[in-house]
Image (tube, rainbow, N blue to C red; front, side, top):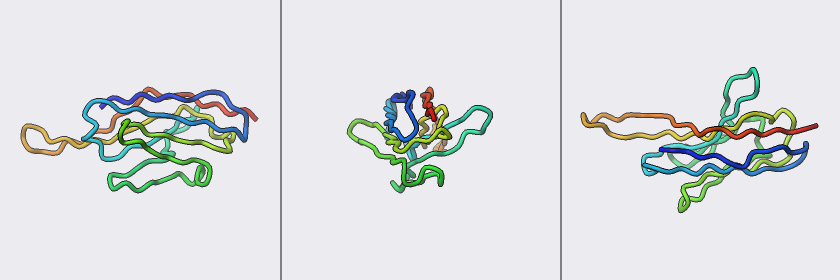
Length: 123
């Protein structure tokens, strides 16, 4: 699975951005897909994601401001970010978890990452 993220940029506090993540390859093997972010000097953290069952999970810090959605026909996941704050500044990564059966009939679980897109929120 390959992931191509786009949509980052520079925005003032209170503004909005929409990130897109287009998946290609063996997309039917994707169990879960979502967005992580990593700010300078900090660990990568979950922002929002779809689970394998289709439910959504959000970081407490973005609840009510960010919305994850998807277009299955386009194999694309979106992250609508509203009311952005300077603390949202980070590199945002798209991530997908896949499950494939190998030649020994064993499930192989993998996590795939996109290239990251920079989001900068000025105060």
